[in-house]
Amino acid sequence: MGFDRISHDPAVMGGKPCIRGLRITVGMIVGLVASGCSRERILQAYPLLEPADIDQALAYAAWRLEEREEALVLS
Image (cartoon, rainbow, N blue to C red):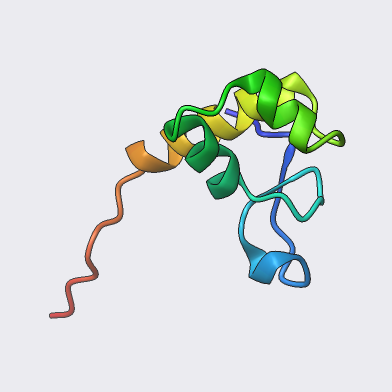
């Protein structure tokens, strides 16, 4: 799955996944949605965001939660 609206740059927000290089993190968007903030309110508070940014932030978070990290077993 491609996430063309999600960027990772060590120079922006410590490399956290952000929306289109902005200083708006995926975690912040997900947190706002989880706390009950409406999409309209989020877009009003962050005018540089687009509705598709919220959709992709949620999809990215869901994808990351499904990723499995296997422990490295040394023999």
